[in-house]
Length: 155
Length: 142
Image (tube, rainbow over all chains, first blue to last red; front, side):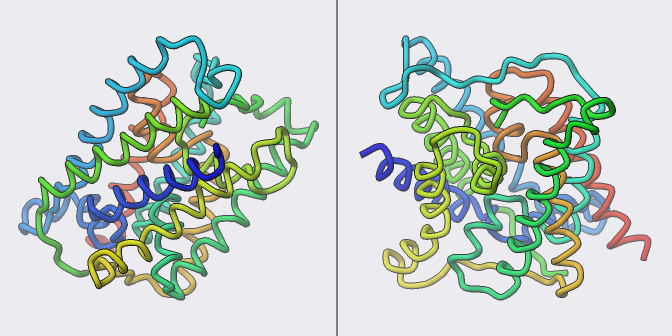
């Protein structure tokens, strides 16, 4: 039951990406192109995607997290880490560069697989390799001195 | 570069739908709807027993365009202009960066900001900034 519902939630999430047009890399790049403001090519739509998503999630979380536990789990798994570190900044910076090169972040890239496009398969293949590498490095004990361990519950 | 039109209403409604999915996942499984975290945990090493649920969520994401095709009779517009080399480099950076930085647009940008997390705010500002900078360099300096 929980598995089927998680498939349905993935579908709703994907439908949101498609309806909002965030699934279209051209639109993402035109949003990230602040130089396009002067030439009239800037597309601010993605700010509306974020606004809609955060508004609903903020209100919904306040409601849901007041309960004692989720429907299909014994507790809520929320990130506990609060302090900032170099790792969250460098990781996000690296992600942003890749995002700006093609216009894909992980959600839209996975949704693009369903379009059957060759480009999406290449991108997702490389993305999984990058994820595996980061996970491999994170689990190496010798790196624990220079990289603070990730919060296992965050995202 | 392909021109796109401003779609505030569709984008706001679509965004709200993403929010609905994030709230549903929290209500049912008690977990953050971070696509990078969910996807990366499909790869080893495995730390818990949530593999099937994560795979089902990702399968739903992948199946969404097919459902759209059945419902509307056509696939939504999608334009990918990058060549193979750029796709590989960008994919590696997105995969590595989201895991190293513990989240992507959904985990930090949607769920994290909604929880008023300072870490998520810093991450979101950072990836937006390097995203803006990258497009500026690619489009206007080269």
